[in-house]
Image (cartoon, rainbow, N blue to C red; front, side, top):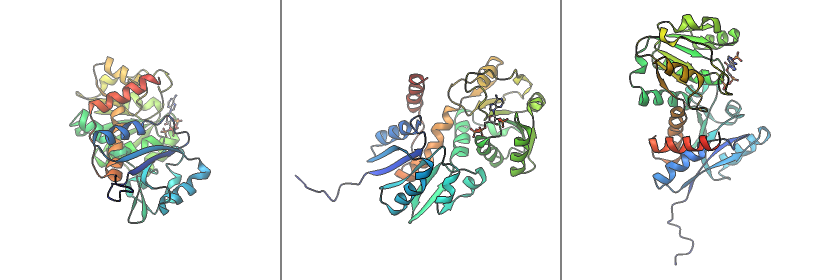
Length: 288
Ligand code: ATR
């Protein structure tokens, strides 16, 4: 028997921190990939409240807690900026980080939500970005990543619709002239001739009905998507589907946004598969 085997590969450890954190599906996603790819690693949930963020990050930087990096979620996505050494342009523009890692003794931060959004549409509806006009509903934190992604993909006419017009106006101002803010009353006109509608608002999450929209005013082959994935078929998606419009649900974005983090921490780029999607759907149904 070999005692204290020095040749054994040490386990690579990653985390998701937040408060509350028990609802996170990230451990299921990363756990699945670790098993599939036979990587000696772990991905664990750590409850870190606001007062403990600095000490958690301190232990991470010093190597004391043995993690290589991890995901950051509510309430730390914005405040973690102050704790890291380098924030990339994507995270800075979006105003939040969801992925951090140690690199050459420095703590780095990025945001993979915009990547997850486009990778999901690329996989589910190739050619989606050929549209000239897009409508984004909602002007909260989640909307920023979508606006960033759409601009990056070269969509030049983006209508940003929000219940509170002033919020849409200030968010649009951060992204320049390709984004036109509007209130809910502007939604029907915005949809006319649009090739893409994205719901980023929490409208419909709690079972409330979506507004009565005429998606048929959109272009032929238009796409309606929602970044909310619980329920999987949100009121917006159900309405669009009933009107014969192509839909893509938000679960794929959750799966794809996890890919870059896994690749950074564990050194292998994982695949988003139907098998993984089904694992998360089963979990969503279990906890519905
Ligand atoms: P997140 O960071 O997840 O985007 P948020 O900052 O609370 O969350 O933003 C939620 C978004 O959903 C906002 O755009 C909000 O509109 P307001 O800015 O007017 O609050 C939108 N939203 C929530 N409930 C809504 C409702 N019942 N009708 C219309 N929009 C709603």
